[in-house]
Image 1: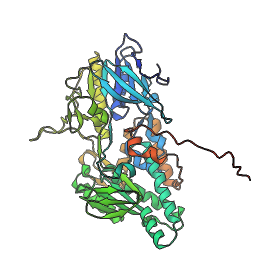
Image 2 (image 1 turned 60 degrees about the vertical axis):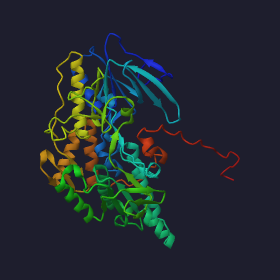
Image 3 (image 1 turned 90 degrees about the vertical axis):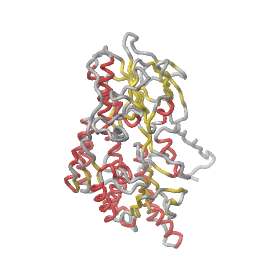
Image 4 (image 1 turned 120 degrees about the vertical axis):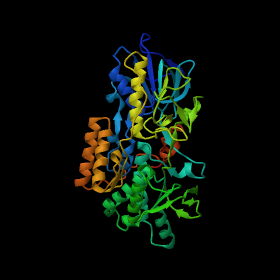
Length: 480
């Protein structure tokens, strides 16, 4: 069956050629993509059949999602086509629901917007698990219904339209006591999580609104109240104390209300209540409080560490012959860090580590098929970067702290380097150029339904909801 074909319920899809082993990769994110790219390069055409199971036909370059949410970068330009980049790989659209280690098979669930769901079974000789991560949700009343994430293209596009809509509605609110209260709530944005997602989104969106504020007659960018909340004592802790303090100082100088060592107690349609007792009236809650491994990991029955699949230094899964794992869903020993009293830490769940783990995983799977030699994963971080909008950024390339325009240049150069597709690099670079010399885009497309942008649906934790039926009153003629 081809990747484009319509599978039948319960259909078993075996090998394309039974004489060749089949390598199935679960997940087309950074780890899965780079594993397949290495396998595609190292294995001869008759060495193995390569299959990837992914819910979309693209690799999402997620570090640029804040720029998608602000309209700086076109959404499709951060989506790298799997079919174009991996021509030897068979793409099966869907999500792996179950892995049968004894039978060496995975069950794939395929769904569509109309609610139709089907399943197929894929056989494997080698299995690479790279399902990635999902937004961390806590059992806080109201967050699943009213919180919005920023981990998918759907969420990024929805957030952009939602913010524009709230400012449009606030601008049209009547100048009455009730109207002023409603206006203030619509002009308040609460972002939870002062890591990369929350900090970059707040900083970049604030600067973007300053450039498009002429869109409104009664509202200016300075009227928007930004609240950044985190239970941690610092902003951007991944970049270290010094750059974290600089970022915090910059945000507060811009007027961002940063509240550290505070969390969310509950959420409803009109407000967010914090653990310090404060209540913030708002219509916008952005939830970026970290990530957790894909729920598939918990269904495997294999050892985990802090929710991530335990693997050996060569990324093989102990006790599961023919299985490897990498990326956000794997607890990979960080051999580049000296072991401390509590043992060697795991590599952090970053795109940079996932990319390089994927390459090593592909190499080691090829070695298991007789091509090349296996090796353990060892990589020292090249550094981390954070874009804060305008000419502001903080970066730490090779351990050297940078701020301002130089950090901005390093940040953009790193993103262009890390994008694994030359056409996408060119398109993103052109987007940046146009945003420098042309007025920024400020149109509201309204192409994403609010229900589809809920964290659980957008990230595949729940099946998509079918659209509501459209009814027409045929007895009424509008021309009457």
